[in-house]
Image (cartoon, rainbow, N blue to C red; front, side, top):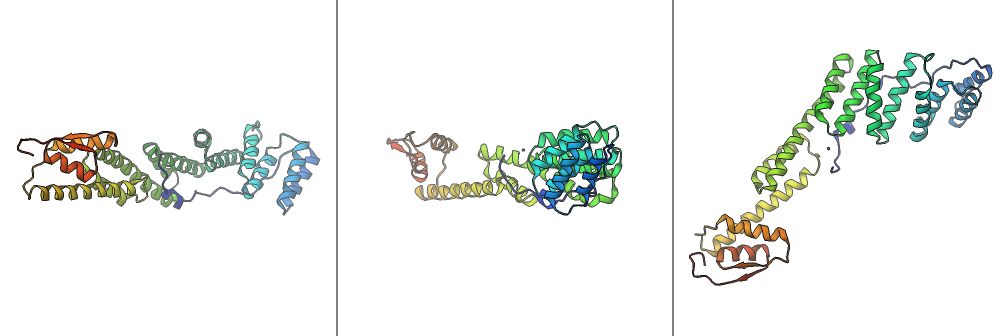
Length: 305
């Protein structure tokens, strides 16, 4: 997957075909049913909460009351409370619960987990939902959410597999899937190029690294720290150019600096200012003077003096 970067996923909305309206209750307790109906009819969020809690006090197995409470808290952006009641609804025996409500509970709980950064929990319940949900339209939404979750974790191969499978289930949402698949493909390519660019940069192949960073920027401009790295590589290349000019000037345009001189200087520079190089030829001395690396000179009678 980490450096922070703006994800294009922020532009992709959830496939929200699921109804978000409260559900009707099934209970054998008349008083619980009365309080539940009061919660349905109430227009004030606090009144709803109080009424549903009264219903649950009379019938603690009323899964619909837990679900409706979760909806109230979700609308109030109190996601921790919403999660609590969805978890309670999910934990209750559901033999007499409609399939639609079971599916809503699982789907909404996974979405809340993801919203709160609980990727592991969200993935687990979405994979469970894949096995339990039979409605193809809703199942397609589960694949979409799972693909998006995996994409956010930079698990691109897995994300693409889920998204392509979900796209086949519901052609009505083909555009949503196509957009997200394109993002996943671009991100997968950027991830591969980024790793190769870092390797090129590490071995000093700055022109190669620059080309790769520029390619990544063309695919996903905000990917990781690619812009900062490209700027850094440009700076190194510019510094190298200036150094070559300085060396040329020092030798009247006839310099042939051995690569080993650059390697020695770069190694010393990376080791820190406590390392002092002993230079006995003009090549290495010029490099040290340009980079600011501490050095001591020893005159030489050799051809590179």
